Length: 522
Image (cartoon, rainbow, N blue to C red; front, side, top):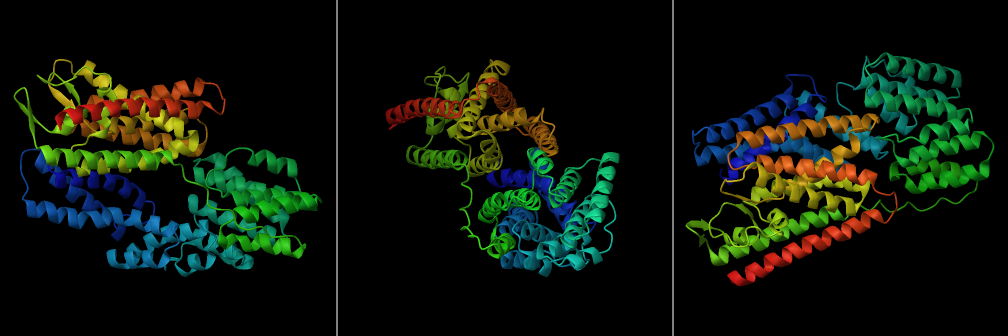
């Protein structure tokens, strides 16, 4: 499989997920989902043609990459830029890629959602779709504090839009002192949620509405009890603000001041003003904003090591050229680090370190790029839940199990196993073990996504030549085993760092052996 065909395969897989996402943003058969569908089908058709022995010309493959990539990666890029508050850049991307108002409006919803999360009410209102998305308009007006305007927004129909709009209305009613009406609306939201379907957004909106009512009534115990459970998707400053309001109404101004200060410290720039106004009215100090929470370091560090190893691999292969092992021409990097089965003359074929070192050798730039991308996507989630040490342990166990299961399932075959897929899927398996038994609605959604993704990887492993099915399956199995074992280990804070240091030591020992082989080749 050529590099551009592999890239088109990655684009087609990403297109499937982008299509599912864009369908929630726009009506069927409007520009955004249609362009995403056409791009996905085009990329997939070229890949299928190549895999079924109907070679496609280089010009057509290049055209497919150029045409399909923007319309599949574009929506993701808009989301990333919007989260970074680069609103002008998102406007340019949307204008360039989509030509109808329906297509542009669909992606503007992404920008509006990101602006609302940052508390940028003006940016959200400025970019509201022309078709006047009722739920988003209600949320944006609530973020701006235009309470009567929130109540003037018409009904939002059913489903998530209605839940979001009703949540904003509860907030407006409370701000206007109409507590009983707000309580009635919150009760109606709970009744609707219990009738089903029970969606994560509906649960969050209902819980927030009820908690806002409890806070306005000064029911501190109930507010603390409710917010003691994880409420995914709600910013920490908003949670602080609810507790502070409950304490304030209950008459404990000193405690309320401290909690409002924590809210101001944690709030993004767009929401700091509401807490600062309250504190200044009381003559209290407004604290400086806290620094953004540090992103986990192990995931990007591991990705950087994989990338550096690939750079070293490319330099080694370029300097020495192909070498002959037995009667088989082989790249020096594979001789040094790949996991091999049945290769005559393969040095140290049974060495323990090959069960790990193969993760640091890749078949090409697309191969390493795809693995690094998935690692960054899933690794940051698992590292945020468990910590850096657990991430490295999941990678090590998944890598080793991928090679081990391959050696059992394909005993007698002649093959070389390379790539970090086993380790990356080990991280995915550990994450799945972490969420599969959770009752949290967000974790349930994550479980479904992980299972769907793993099924897709399995199908691709079966359909595409030279892709290791058992290496992938072994990675998932190893990761899940580690995930369940980790849950049974002591809750001591040092457990994660200890297993992390052990993982680093094992990987370092394996890579030291690789360098020894490389020195012999040189």
